Length: 173
Image (cartoon, rainbow, N blue to C red; front, side, top):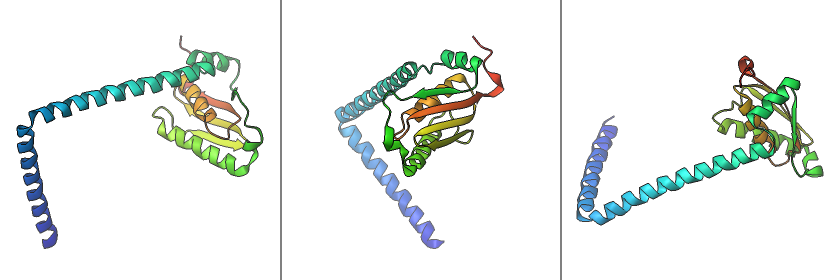
């Protein structure tokens, strides 16, 4: 306990001395402070633009795959199954069982990384590159996101979705 306390006191002292030193250097070099602030502003702007480009790209992908919310709602009024295929079929590459297991795992990981999807409420299975997803999502838009994320996974030939919207959210505009 004594060693811990001594280490804590020494750490605090080093922290105070380091902070004091940095403050002195900042006061001596106001142009460096301004360059730093400008860099932070530029970095924030760049990150915002990149996020916007990513969002626009994903929206374009959803549109190209006919996975916009209105299209999902329309298809769900005709039945519960939605199927999408990749533009180019990966053929025999997807026939491997290890590839199927890897694809299913990668899809689950993609769902876990998406704030709108729950890997615990979407079941994923893959056989010879044919992926089936089922479960519950919050909106028709989430169905499109789930299908698009599955389709962009290596080894996936097509995706069949029987995802359902919680609380039957189809009664909208």
